Image (cartoon, rainbow, N blue to C red; front, side, top):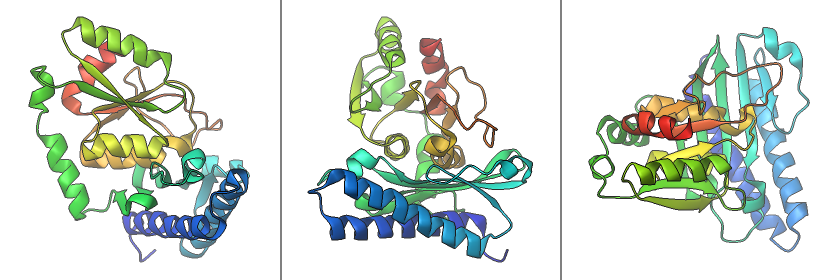
Length: 264
């Protein structure tokens, strides 16, 4: 394994995004279901072929693949979502969709990347990455404007299905003297990227997800120094027999106690 895992995650997510952009250009937007199908399959087949060549001994859990439970005994498992946000991908002009590539090794997230192909960037755990350095600096400094209540707490939510927990969280924050603003967005990867990039402050989800929905975004969040956990504050764990992982919270560490209290 001469290629670093961080580089593998970043490279594969980025190149899968290029595959998806090419398919988008080829198919157009007249037939949304056909474009979604082509995107899911094309990106999945690309990632599976590449991982088989680069990391043939590793297990893979993909949203679009058959779940081979041999992964439960593996030390290294790649957890991928070939196309996160198929609805947004099939809508002309939308850029809030993503590709997720993460490595779970010996009980912990070891590497990950979230490509935002239509935005022309990839967030990853690669040490030395200028973008990761910028994210790390952002999360090392307290969000003073929020903590002193001068600015609203921006909560990124689903375009169509904001979870009930967000309404309860807003009530808690308003009672504590904060204002809030909802930021509707598509895929989970795009939502968490918005928090990491400073376009939102909190992502809290309790409406049901699977490991591939949040493994890569969680890996990048943790590498950047953000808070990423279950909504009860518990550690995010992966490579379970049932990959259902229904909830997640990502925010600035300085806000985590406040948000967790509101969720509780």
